[in-house]
Structure formats: structure tokens, C-alpha cells
Image 1 (cartoon, rainbow over the protein chains, first blue to last red):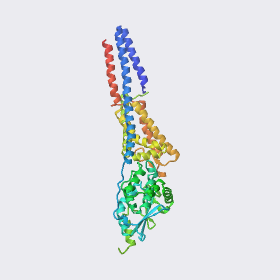
Image 2 (cartoon, chains in turn blue, purple; image 1 turned 90 degrees about the vertical axis):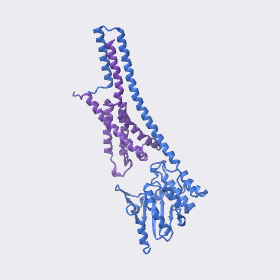
Image 3 (spheres, rainbow over the protein chains, first blue to last red; image 1 turned 45 degrees about the horizontal axis):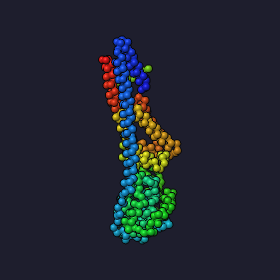
Image 4 (cartoon, rainbow over the protein chains, first blue to last red; image 1 turned 180 degrees about the vertical axis):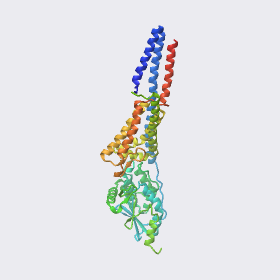
Length: 295
Length: 172
């Protein structure tokens, strides 16, 4: 049998009373002693309450501290992110490579028009694997772009719009990149490169529009046209349409590690075939070699 | 009715307490280590309004660590057992509503969390596991005494007074 607290209290009290009455009858105890015992017993009850109060107070204080600490930590994290200045980086020699924006399709074509290898890159600025792709392949891509052997069609989409706090970093960053390409095409690669070099954390606070605009400004992209493209969210609709189309295009599907098949980012397509860049590290130079056998 | 000696029950209480403390400390530590993942996990339940996901995801890992710490030292054990049971019931309800609504998420109980492929959900296992933890919490709520607890240490202070009271009565 498990004795509850209340029952235990009752039992103790009864024992105490019995003891006191026995004492009284057997030894004819003086009144003061009984009074003393009573006051000690009262103090004891008080002490018991005090013990409970201490335990309760400790529990409340520790849990309250945890809640406050956690909320403040989360707030600090988003404030720290909001104060981040995205470093403005430039890609050496990229200004010589032609950049053409297709305003209707909301895609950016980088490279000489007569380059024989065409790569289509579907990327999301929020996506960590896209960053991995960029850091692993950008040097080779840029080399081939400048050599005039490869052209890359960038589809910047918003697959991970829900993975930033607040939501929508993917759309916002893609729109800003397209605005840069519209106003100052020669700065597009710098902007694209800078943004992947300083990517916000997935499921964390994304960069704000002010931070993205500041990056563009520091790269030398300013003016009323740029501002209106940002303020009007000019490319948002087409970015979403591009995502919707890509998500339905079976030619772009890949099988992920958990066995599911579908569209994801990054998706890299060369000569109408999805490139397995994670396993095939020489995919681009191989393509260039077969397109330009003599070189 | 056969009854285990109180000392043995206290020892079982200690094991229960350490088990529950380990659950909270481990799950809290994993969540603290990746707060962005915790955010994704909380959001995936699609229960909280957008403005509440961030503070809840921020506080939850620390609350779990606090629970773990308090249960470990054994302070306010009945209260901590009850609070642990309440939080676990909230978790079980969260998983159950995801299951019922046909969401495909990972519970994010010990890290992870967020969307998973349709065939990858493990709702029954997750609920069963949490129910196991719930039993530990209920033990503490119903029989909060255990060996080496801070409650016991506080009570011992009181026990001294009881002895004093007895001797006061005896000697007077």
C-alpha cells in the first residue's frame, strides 16, 4: 500500500496525540510541557510547509529562468542575424563574361553565346546543398565561363521559402539577384557569389531585404529602377511559377538518399541530363573535353 | 497485500528519477545544440500560430534541460513528476494530432524533426516511447520519495526538529 501525504499527516498527528495523552495520564505531565510540545509541533508543521515552499520556489525559479533564457536567446539570434553585413565579394574576371537576363522567364544566362556546353542550374539561396555545390564547382564553372566553353542558365527558385524566419527569404533573395541582373548584369556573378559565401542558416532567420539591398548597393548596384524592382517584388510571381513548373518536370527529378523521387535543389542539368555532381566531381571538365576534343 | 519495504520503493524511485532526468537532459541537450532544427520540428506540427513558433522553439530546449536538472537533484519531486507528465501528454497529443491529420513529420523528440517522406513516419513508436516516459513521470507524481533527493535532504532538516520535539516533550 502506498501511503499518501495526507494520510501520513493524519497518522503522525494521531500518534502524537496518543503519545501526549499517554504521557499526560501516566505521568500527570505539567501543563507547560504540553504547551511546549504543542508549539514545537506547530513549528514543525510550519517547517514542513516551508520545506514545500522552498522546493516549489526552486522549481518555479529554475523553470522561469529556462523559459526567459530560451526566449531571449532566440531573440538575440535573430537580432544578431539582422546586424550581419553580408561581405561584398567580387569574382575576378567575371565582368568580361556576358550576362543576359530573360525578364519573362526570370532566368539569367551567364557565358558566351557560342559556348558549346549548356548547363541549367536550379538553385535556392537558402539551400545548404546549393552552397555545397557552389563551393565545390564554382571555380571550375567560372574558369569555363571565362574560357567561353560553357554557359550557365541560372534558375533561382523559392523551394525553401518556408525554411526561414520569417518565411520567404528564398523568394526575396532570388528577386534581388534578378533585379541586380536587370540593372547591372556585370554585377550578377558578384552578387550570386557573395550570397553563397554568406548564407543564412536554414530554418534560422534569413537576411532581410535591407541586408540584401545593402549588399547590392555596396557592389555598386543602385538607382530607382533597382529600387522599384525590389519594392514591387517584380519577379516573385515568375519565381514561383518556375518552381511550380520544375516540381512537375519529371526530367528534373532526382532520387534522394531516403529513396523518394522528386524535384529538389540544387538540380544541375547539362545537355538535357541531370548531373550527379556529388559523385562525379569531374562532370564539367568531362563535358568540356567531349565538346572540345582538340583542346 | 504484499508490500515492498519503503526503502526498496525509495530505491526504485531513484532509478525512475534518474531515468526521467536522463530523458529530459538528453533530449534538451540535443535540441539546444541545434536550435534551428528545433524550430523546424516545432513548426512541422502546424499547431502554433506563426508568432509563437519561434519563442516556443527557443524556450523548449531550455525547459527540458531545467526539468532534467530539477528531476536529477530531486527537488519538488511530486510537482516535477506532475509537470513532466503534463509536458509529455502535450507531446503525445502533438504526435497524435499529426497522425490524425495525416501530416508526415518526424516528432523531433530527440533531435531531427520536420517533414519526412510519407512512408517514413513512426507515430505509433513515438507515442509508445513517450507513454513509457509518462509512466516514469507518473510514478514520481504518485510516490515522490526516492533515495538521495534534495527533498529528502530538506526533510531531514525537519526530522531533526521532530527529534528535538520528542526530547523536549520527554525531558520537560
